[in-house]
Length: 111
Length: 114
Image (cartoon, rainbow over all chains, first blue to last red; front, side):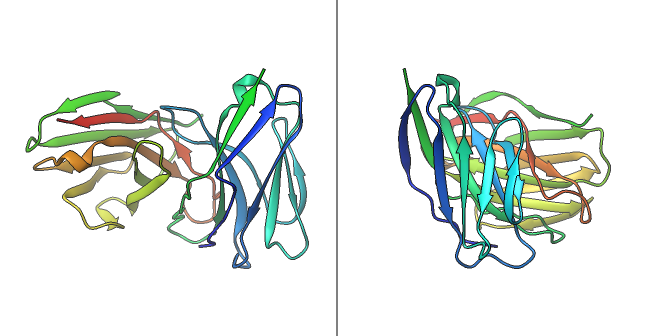
């Protein structure tokens, strides 16, 4: 399982684009990069997953360079409701599906 | 569609009392199941996972145990709670090998041991 490193916290303002970068230097060939969002007193929620290049869905975009040693979660035009903890994980496709959560990035969106 | 349930939502227990938290999943078969604990202001710690009925793997030595008596039921137990067992307990499921890698989490149980 890939060990990931991401900033502990970030501040932003409503309407801005937020980019959270995660380092995963030792990511395995079969690992996908997945981001989860967690609000207080709730379980984490899947946001986006990718293997390489760019993935976009209705919530976010995920940019993964060719060497896959890092990834950037991009949240367009954040609102106050995007205040949460964001976790970056390397997910293998093995049978156990074990995940190792770090401390994540606490994003605080201000009005 | 698949849903995951956990109960109770909150629990206050005295030190030394037993514990039983239940998690059930609907709408899928033979899921991988997971128990996590999250201390205040911290990330999630994987406690147990199961790839099938009766198959339990422990990640952290502790006074907790897990069981999977049915395909879509996962139970977290303790015979005697410690103060350090307080936390937010989350159950999660994933499709078995060959499916997507994403885990889906339940609503959690907030446990306070006094």
